Image (cartoon, rainbow, N blue to C red):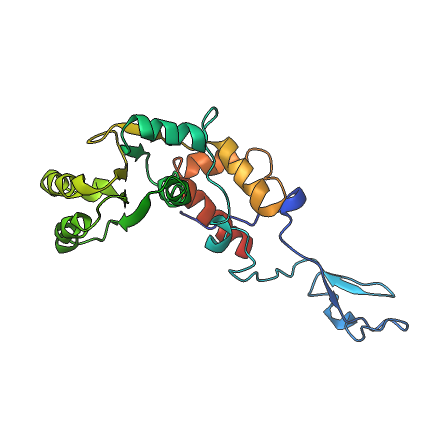
Length: 245
């Protein structure tokens, strides 16, 4: 991401916390610490000493941008869309469709969160994942695994863009016994599109407010969006690092 950016320090995004230090003023119970005054940027008083430049390390569990917190955020649909709309569209496509979008736009989140909605309709969804580092043998063996999924089993395949045309044809045939087949891909191809995903500065702002209860400084969401070329995942990674300091 290039040179390290400063922490966010505006409004609710003040990441430098005040921590009380000892003070050697006569009536102060936090003695002693006036010696720190010159080199710790302390604010001395007769009651308490504070340091303004102490950054409190936040553990991964308490960092609001940690994965454990991101996973609790419901998928945010484009305006006019929702689970009912998406499921209706999938049914119209005979439960055989693609979810399309570039890197880091939320395809994996969507395909994971659709599972309980499919289960509520009597399907038994099984999620398979392909990643950039998936080897040729793993991709070739995938067809064998998919053949084991039969109705009411429902195949969800995340990362179908990793497949060559030959591998895709094998996978498509292997999925024919399943009750449904939904894939995520980077570009429109191979299967009808149920939903095309996009990100925006507005989406970043909304996620930040949900995760932190605060607002980004003016222009920060737009800067993040353009710096990471609309990759929401990379935007959130940067915010994680900046929160950690």
